[in-house]
Amino acid sequence: MSTGETFGRTIQLFLVDGKPSGLRKATIHGWTGMLFVSGASAFGDLTAREEVDRTGVYILAGPDPDRAGGTRAYLGSGNSVAERIKQSALRRDFWETAIAVTTSDDDLSKGHAEYLEARLIELTTQAGRVVLDNGTQPETARRRLPEVDRANMEQFLANLKIILPVIGLDMLKPQPRAVSQSATPPEERTTGDVRFEIRHKTGVQAMAVEEDGEFIVLEGSEALTGTGYVQQSYGGLKERLCAEGILVPQGTDRLRFVKPWSFNGPSAAAAVVLDRNSNGRTEWKVRGSKQTYHDWQQARVQEREQT
Image 1 (tube, one colour):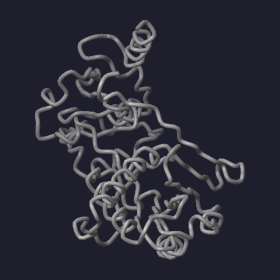
Image 2 (cartoon, helix red, strand yellow):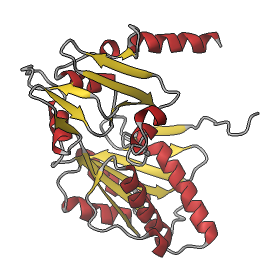
Image 3 (cartoon, helix red, strand yellow):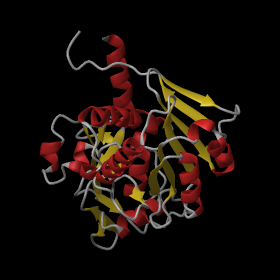
């Protein structure tokens, strides 16, 4: 067995009332932590759970009213998560998902919960994937815990990093290298990555790489604008990129990426670049070839099957 080998994990997702839209309970095999997840309609079921009336942390998340396509979240902690999350939910109207995090053996202290809250805020801020609705950022260094307790809480956080994306909230995941290392020239920080390109008949060109399931359009790429297509699923996202200065005008009919941007897939990236709904699996091609993203992906599947 080689060092650094990773192992699979068993995540149990239990539909409390048998409905996918109702209250859900999520756990990892061998971990005492547990999460309860609900939308607004099942919020009363969440706060009524005996396990939620314990010390822990919670998250309220939903669409960011100020950023098209963005997510806003509020993080908190309390000796009774049920009481604190109800108070926080009443003060905020953006949230659509409520998540309560406690333990099966009720072994989190107030100090543990406050440490987790501070670290969650810190990690979320560093990742930059969602906008926090918290007014202040607690200093982790001031959440003094014994060394053993800090180690246990960091392991607790490691499990949260695994389970939160499974329930649809990927707020702790660090940005891809192609985004986080933007001070390094793109050719250097994407060494070894397969590069994809779009070369449009108008002369517009865009370059992208895929990293850990995310499709990143690199700075210097161009995007069409003002094409007149009205069926633009990603129009709101494009407006957001312009508002945030990711896309800037370049001439009268195109925009330019001045920073790299991570999309949730090649089709979203192609739609923004071509200013119309697009099938990114065929629009993006391996740089310098006619091989589409789809064909490249199928070739990788075949390679794995042969090894």
